Structures are given as C-alpha cells and as structure tokens.
Image (cartoon, rainbow, N blue to C red; front, top):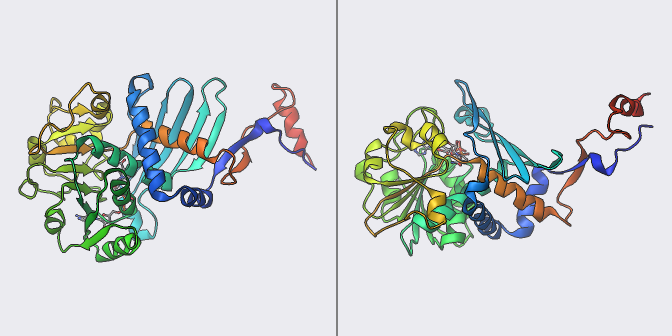
Length: 349
Ligand SMILES: NC(=O)c1ccc[n+]([C@@H]2O[C@H](COP(=O)([O-])OP(=O)(O)OC[C@H]3O[C@@H](n4cnc5c(N)ncnc54)[C@H](O)[C@@H]3O)[C@@H](O)[C@H]2O)c1
C-alpha cells in the first residue's frame, strides 16, 4: 500500500465545478465588484510588480500564451489560449488555468481553473477601467459580440457602474438569443439589435468583444459619437483588431502594459509614438482619466498578468475555510529532501 503524501505535498485545487459553486456562494455581481476592487488595488501598486509581455505561441488557428508576474511575495502565471475557430468545432475560444506560488519557497499555493475566472476578471477589469473613464451617470451600454465573455461584461458594468440597459449585437442571432436569455431576470433591460450601429445608438459605453483572427472593423469612425467610452476587449493579438484606426485618432487611449499592448492591442495599427496613457497612472492620480463630456475614451484592453494575479490571490483568500477546493499531491515530499529516489519506493509493488 503506497504511503499517503504529507501535508507538504498538497496544493489546493479549484476545479470548474468548485469554481461554479464558489461564484454562486458569493453571488456573481458581488464577486465582480470584489474582483474590480482587488484588481484596482493591485493597479495602485503597479510599480512593485515584475512585468513582462506575455509569451505567445502563434499558429494559423490561434494563440497559446503564458502570463507570469510577481509582487516579490507571490508569483503567478496563467496558461490561456485564444482560438476563434474553436467554436465551429464545439470548443471554446478561450480556456485557461492558473497557478499561484510562494516566492520564499517556490512552492505552489494554488492551482485553479481559470476559464470562468478569466471571464470574471476581464469583466471586472473592464468595469474598473470604466469607473475611471466612462461618462458619469452612464446607464446604457452596447455589447457587440455576444460570446462567452458577454454576460460577465454586462453584469460587471451593472454591478460596478450601475448600468441599467444593455443593447446587444452579434453577427450570429443564436449568440444574441443566448445572451438575452442568460441576462433575463438580472435586472438589466436587454435589447437585441439588428446591427452594431443600432446597438450603439444612445449608449454611453460601447464594449466590443468579438473573436476573429483577421483585422476586423467592428466600429467605424462615423459610428462613434462624442463623449462615449469604448471598452475594446476582442483585439488582443497581432493581426486581431476591432476598431477602425480613425477612431483611435479621435480618442484618448488608455492601456494596461504598453510593451504588450503596442504589439497586441488596437494601437498595433498606429505609429509607435501614438500617445497612450497607462491606466495605473490614472488610478494613482498621476494622469488624467476623462477630462470632459465630449472626449472619447478608449480602454484598449488586451488582458495583463497582474489582473490574473489579483484574481488568483482573491480566490486563494475566498476558498479559505470552504469546501470549494480539493487538495492534490502536486509536490513530491521525500522524508529527507534529498531522498527523492527513496520516496519513489513508497509506491513499489
Ligand atoms: N482583453 C482581455 O482581457 C480578453 C479576455 C478574454 C477574452 N478576450 C477576447 O475577447 C474576444 C471574445 O471572447 P469570447 O470568449 O467571448 O469569444 P466567443 O468566440 O465565445 O465569442 C465571440 C463572438 O463574437 C461574434 N462575432 C464575430 N465577429 C463579429 C462581428 N463582426 N460583429 C459582431 N459579432 C461578431 C461571434 O459570433 C461570437 O458570438 C476574443 O477575441 C478573446 O480573445 C480578451
């Protein structure tokens, strides 16, 4: 009978099922609000983090990425993919898993599914950015692209900003119907629209969240009126953008980590000296966010490792004392640290 692993071998693991149970135990909107605050708190201490553009492995079908960061005490990374062609094969565009580790020992402290968590943290980050950039009193948003991220985006804008009305558009009517059905009873008024132009009519916040590997033009310049906030989520890879470049010439653009966004974001279409403002500088009061009612603000979101770090440390704290995780023997635990081979004999038959 193999000897069972010691406590040192065990790492908390949050499965998809446990993540779903955890989210419901907290409440989706409460969790989005709490995540927005945790992400904002980490943006506030941006300078302490180790930062690097994510390591991306591109193929004709999509991209696989590793997203590491550390604040000197905790290290984290996320494995995530982006495959727009997956949907046609009955697979998701984006799936992810993540790990948190103690810098002092290098030992993992948490292993978790991150597909749901990515949708939650992306939506929380969008709403956190909108808190600083969107026009005050915004009540209506457009949600263009009604895939896996869409409901999370709409609910985060409701929870954090008080959005009351969401106007949907997707080229696939089934995606729109799915989102409309999922948001029924959420307290949001939901309108399915016949075009993206109709969806942005009267909206103060415009979220684009589509998936296409080619340069796409979800919004053209003539569609975007003065004073709106654009939350551009789907342009997040070289060659994958959603906005016509003329919009960027009129907008004030805010980004996460410039070395990554210059390559992956909407601003990949612009000259290298196109002016941008780092969002963390707005949050810490070092730069201005929205200046006036007529300004077009653009959050050129690509998703940065610090947002995953925030989400992972939030989950680590939130599962404490709950049954929403299992312990996996991820780490080898020899009786004497150098006797790894001796440990192997525990399972000898
Ligand atoms: N910025 C970030 O942090 C972040 C995080 C997660 C996902 N993403 C990106 O967000 C995008 C959406 O992700 P998802 O998981 O919801 O993908 P998804 O494949 O589930 O949904 C994409 C939707 O976009 C629709 N669409 C495609 N072209 C369109 C068009 N021209 N007009 C309107 N709708 C159109 C599709 O029909 C589909 O319903 C992806 O590109 C993904 O890479 C970004």
